[in-house]
Image (cartoon, rainbow, N blue to C red; front, side):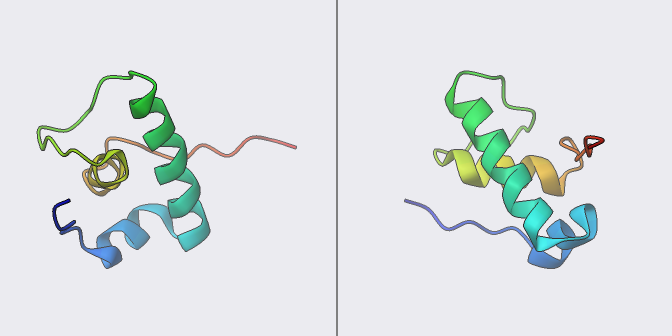
Length: 67
């Protein structure tokens, strides 16, 4: 397993909340694991690392649902 080198501050700036970051990364990792196309050029073996890379590049965003 390789080292994940993604800046936490960049991820936090993209989401505004650690909670949102964790939820986004988990949901995106599940999508990738289910066969969704990767949105980043950086091929990683770890789906969590891929999801975090996509978030840091701004290719995945958070859209809140209305209650």
